[in-house]
Length: 261
Image 1 (cartoon, rainbow, N blue to C red):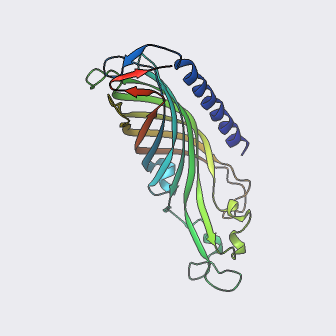
Image 2 (cartoon, rainbow, N blue to C red; image 1 turned 90 degrees about the horizontal axis):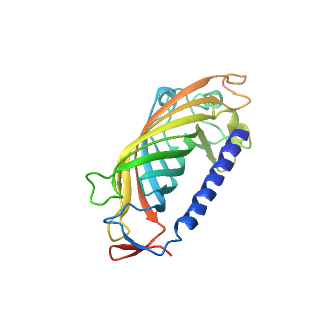
Image 3 (cartoon, rainbow, N blue to C red; image 1 turned 180 degrees about the vertical axis):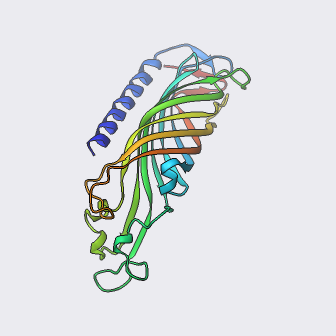
């Protein structure tokens, strides 16, 4: 958990730096055209993706989704720097039921009243990363758009999600889910290939592409109920994500010109 807090703190520092650069890059009285000129653009985007897990990650989970914000600065030379955080979520898991140890003969969990407990299982996680990349505008409709390549590094975490409704199944209440969820996290790298589109006149700005992630993770729980000991296993978690995002730029648009104040 210390590792998680440390990475979250580092992301907060990066976001602060990005917004500081936003203020600095806004001090300019010249009018420039996004259609004709390469510009420094500061933006935030809301992204969504659909992930196909592979490697050890694919042995534990089925396909899952992701959602999250990205803060980005694109410089006049079309290099860019971004900070991104996404939450991962899915309903499917593979292999043995993570709650197999406490299932009755019918494959269900009995609550404190002797009835069937409403317990859901799935996948939850998060990914935090810093990326740098380049926009190739050679064949694009303006010099700020084009084929986009990027690489990044950061933090990846996944776990079995256990949710019991009714608060009446002591087997999975309080801290007990931590003994079953097999939470793992660690260092990750990513590669992205896609397209970035900045409209000449309005706010229809977006990006879309495919992202590859390789994460070196390890189980972080102190005790695994299924093993009756700490799980010392390490994982090679690999995934491919189809993702897209809507981009909001911190600029004032007027006709085809952008004015900085």
